[in-house]
Amino acid sequence: LISAEELGITSANIDELAKGTNNPEINRILGTEGELGAMFGLDAQWAYRAIKANGNFGEIFEKNIGENTPLGLSRGLNAQWTEGGLVYSPPFR
Image (cartoon, rainbow, N blue to C red; front, side, top):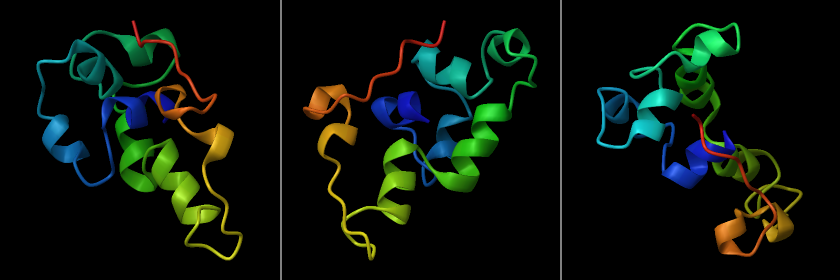
């Protein structure tokens, strides 16, 4: 979910990206390239289903505890490392 956010995979655009992209990391996460799911003992569509149902890390944060919820939390240190936070996911290889 963290990598999905970093790569721009959202619940809104996942169906289009799942058709295949020029980015092998996106393809591996979404199960259209390689055997990543099998390495975890899962099927190829495991990440697709999780992201489609719930969104990426940022979407989940915003829906449940983000600034537009009763808790009203900003991302702060829960932001991606590229945006001043501490959230980082190693590449999917």
